[in-house]
Length: 249
Image 1: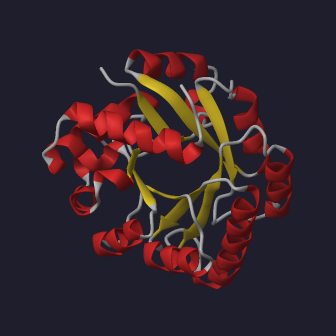
Image 2: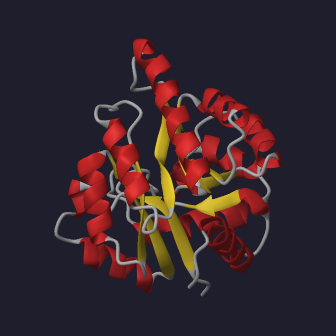
């Protein structure tokens, strides 16, 4: 059994309160060797830093595009904790939850986080719900590198063009019930694919709390869709993650 990497989840979520260690141990038993947990906003980011051990669990820090109050404090925290965090994010655009009047602010803040990620030479994990095309346009214009498009819900052809620029796309277990995610995997080279759980959401079925261990389900679906062995998917997605985040086992 190959070892896997969950490049994006939220172990600070209330669903995991008091059970983080158990959730991590379950993931390890399922072959998930590294988990990147994202803190959203200043307080949540502090929690992500607190539960990260620098071995199995690593932190990324960002802000929800639809809740930008105090984002300047998050920028400062990222700079102070540069040695501990492995990525900036998630950050980006949300045109599903964010009102039309907030879009200009979302774009401005997104660009600030892109600039910081570039300055600190960190990968950036991008949230782009109902805004994939626009997020990709901004990333391209800003010449962002080391980009992870998390749970991308946009057009697969847009994703394929972004893959040519070296952008990575992380695939959640909801691929089991999402034709859009399945089309995305059909279009993308394996070299541009990562595994994510986005736990506690985006589970294989709608009525369950998602967990990092379920990235194996993502790998199984990718294997089936791409017509390659599960071992190859596991090995390549892990290699992609380790290289992108500069991590070692």
